[in-house]
View 1 (spheres, rainbow, N blue to C red):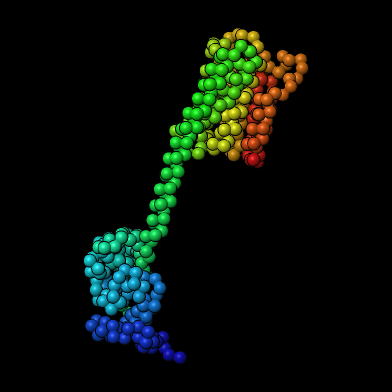
View 2 (cartoon, rainbow, N blue to C red; view 1 turned 90 degrees about the vertical axis):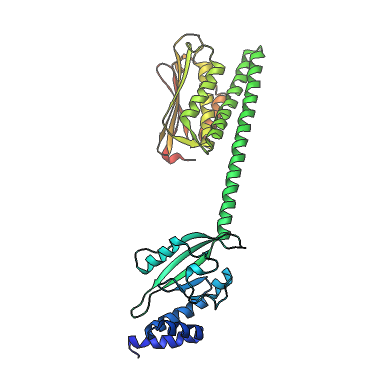
Length: 372
């Protein structure tokens, strides 16, 4: 077996069999390379030329020792025209980027590295190409240091990313416009329902139309907030405040008699969950306004409160009205109760009604393990 130090001339002979013999010999003679240096360089040249990836082999002066055939084909160079040229002189100087050259020199000095360095390659008569460069230092004992510089053309990938980003932005604009239109349409429907409620003579019909108005306004308020924020999440404090203002304006004639307020933490919810929560609040508030205060008096209160509890939540609607014990018979569940139960089930919550002393408290609670 040959000693370790005797391998290098043998490697040189092997590498020169696959490399360009004339070019390797010229470089060896012009630089007065030692046998180990020639061996390492020739072997590197053989590997570089066989590479399917665009590669340049550079010496410490950033001169091209050898290019891969794929580099020449990708960037329009003759295979035998680059050896000995500096990187900055290739083409019309498009490779002579000061920052890149500085990083390559620092790589030789081991003080920096070229790792996924991205730049735009501007060549006359060609579209701007986006390339990513990586440099690997070859520095073996007894051989001159070399850098293997690999070049990846990512122009198509970057173009696809830009097209994707543009499509996302376009869809976001269209979604925002759609939300505006939906919100405006819902407000028009709500206005028609309110005008109809004011014209009818039947009190029962008026209550049904007012309830329908508030249900529509619940969705309209949500759509308006979604359009303003441009996000899929809704800030619940702002949403519940706007919703209660809308219900109060349409159903409470005198705030001295009944006052409707809302409190919430700083949590948010998706549009889907927010829609269900808004409709639940609407139904519970309407129910309180219809049944909790049969006799007109001052000091009536309806309070809406929301608190997040990890991945769960607690939504309560409390009034200080006549309470559950005022009726001798248990009331038959109506449309509003059915809506609340269905919506609560949809978001994985349960509904519990208790006395508030005075009044009634309805709690819609979803524990962390009750996710739908």
